[in-house]
Length: 150
Image 1 (cartoon, rainbow, N blue to C red):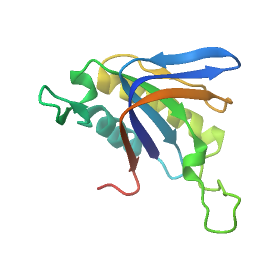
Image 2 (cartoon, rainbow, N blue to C red):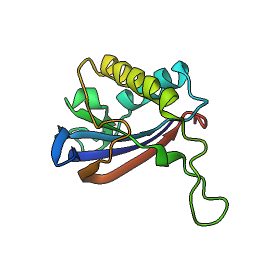
Image 3 (spheres, rainbow, N blue to C red):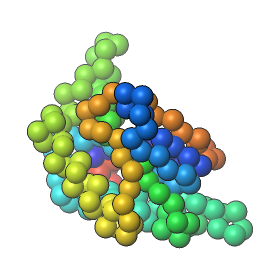
């Protein structure tokens, strides 16, 4: 799994002219799933995101996790995070999981991160054409890949 995590003042996702998900202060998480992903990847990544200390404390130091600022998550599935650009100029998405594999993992990820946070999150819709809007805070953008755990 690969996640692009953006600290936001607000974010929303629109599908066919309707707002599907919207948050205030929190994290916009773009999530890419590949065939090799497992439940272990879900548990590790959701825990990492929930505990990521990237919000300012009283001294203006990035030291607080989402749970301590009462923030929210907007989760968007994004297969293009697994694009390969090694050959030519047209990306290949061969590493991105097909829907029959990705959808159950995506749904399990939602449940797991909600458990980590102790509350529901907002989401887009898997496979839909979405318009994502955000006000990046900082900006703070972090990329995490479960296949390259640091």
